[in-house]
Length: 286
Image (cartoon, rainbow, N blue to C red; front, side, top):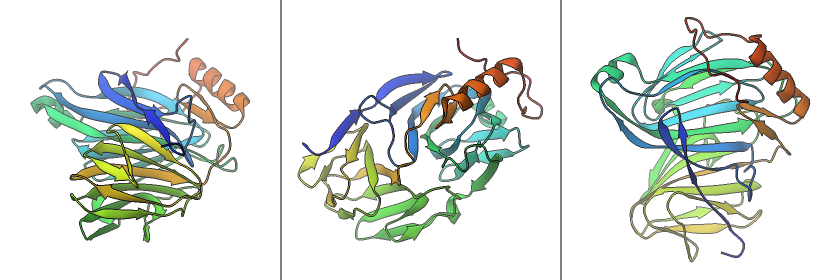
């Protein structure tokens, strides 16, 4: 794997939800517009328990939540209040500033539930970093799907594999869920400058190299490959056009550190849009 960068995801905890985080890392800060990648590990919550990510801020990014199991309630300072179910895309663009909440819906919290999914952050082009915030929800049925010869591709966001997602990305993006039956193959073209593969489950080869589960494999620019499933396998692919260096500080992403400093000061001072009906918030870390 001399031309490939392998990043083993590190185990983290977000308000009690275990996650694996391969991006950002010291070896790779971003892949195309993707600056952050969290795999929310499959977790069973007993009755009376669940996810409760209190009110917190963002700037300079878009968040994309994509669930495999379970449900989340998304609320934000724009007034959005949306139930997110498996296969849906929850897409929030922070721009100059937004606050949001994510939690297990009350009905599921009462009877117990299971959660498994992904949340990624995509940096915004400099022309959009200080633009107005927005939110859109895209039902699973609206996402394009290709299913042939033992290969199932769902295009979550952007464009790739002759598919186009309705999610309103702000720069050239590829985000796809791939499922291959044992023995199936899939060509990985060099249609985007930066690309990476994250294996969720199963045994798969990239040309002659085995890809470890829960590891992000970053592909070199301009190289084409073939995926071959040694068993039934499940992975996601991310990529797109690089945006240039981005700084990340807590929940803030920006090309200019002064924007982050200003956002930190505003949140600490309480000078921020609030989520309707919410009073609790996550305070700025010291």
